[in-house]
Every structure is written in structure tokens, then in C-alpha cells.
Length: 212
Image 1: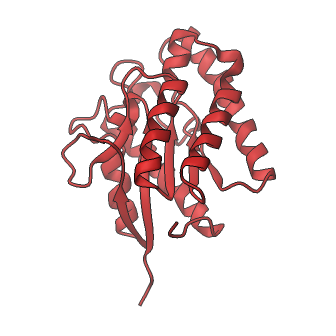
Image 2: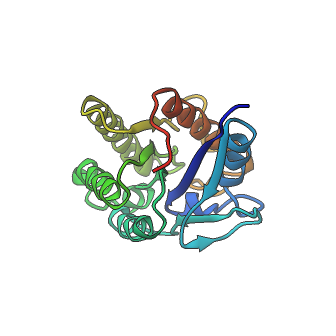
């Protein structure tokens, strides 16, 4: 009998984590949950919010929130729920508003450190941001994504439990998969879920996932 890996998963981020743009309000969360539970994982979704049509629908997705605000909500919730896995997609609102982008890498780094302190031993799947229809905003997104990739490489060198989920590839959502130039449609969320799933499989293959 195969032992199913127990995942206490906290989806963390802004409106995309919330599921804005999806027909059922689940965003990528239901699709990822179904992919994981059909594989070798036993999944409990965690967070202070419950939205969407799925049964296991807890999360920490906050519409309009910037990195520091996402961090505050995530740390508070992690201290209560003690996840062993985070899926993080945050920074879109910082790019849209042009907010403190020069320090965006450091601010994401600070968030990771605080989350690891709040839930020791946890693994973080950190994603790059989705393409944006607005050319100026998309330029900021590309710069932000470069910093995310650098940060993940740095944390890997430090042997931290982090894996990149790169949404900014030919396999990720394209502008045509966005309902409003920012949020994915159902097809866009399916692409996101596939990338999250692949990255979680990578974490499992590296021995990162165990009950904390």
C-alpha cells in the first residue's frame, strides 16, 4: 500500500489566489486539489478565508493586497494553522501600482523568512507573476519575475525548502487567457494548476514534503 503524503496546504496571495476571473470562484485551487488528491497526496487546504464552490476551500487570497499586506495575513494564519506547504503568488498589485519595486525582491525574501518562522519546516512553492495586458505593467512584471528567479536560486543555494513555480513560460497563462488583462479565465487557471502541481512534485522528489 502506498503511503499518501499529508499536505497541509495554504494558498497565499492576492486576487488570483482568491480565484477572481474563474467561473466557479475556485481559481487554480480546486484543480490543484484534484490533481494532488488523485496522486500520492492527502490534502487539507488551510486559511482564514473560505470561497469558491469546492468543499475544501480554505485559503489566504486577498484582493488588492500588496506584498507586505499578504505577508501580514499569511504569517498570522500560519501561526494558527501550521501548514507544511505554501503556494504563493503575490506582487501583482505592487506592479500595477508601481509600489516600491526596487525593494520587491527583499520584501518577498522577508515574507519567506517570516513564514518559515511562523511554520517551521514548511516548504514554499513561490511563483512568478502572470503576464499583464498593460505594456507598462508587464515591463514591471518581467523585472519582478527576474528578481523572483534570483531569489529562488539564492534560497536553493542556502538549502532552503523552496521551489519555483514559473508561470512566465510558454506553458503558463498568456494574455489571451486573461478575462480583464490581469486575472485568468478557466483555461488560464488550469495552466496555473498544472505548473503548481509539477512544482509540488519537484518538492516531493527532493524530499521536502513531510508532516510538520
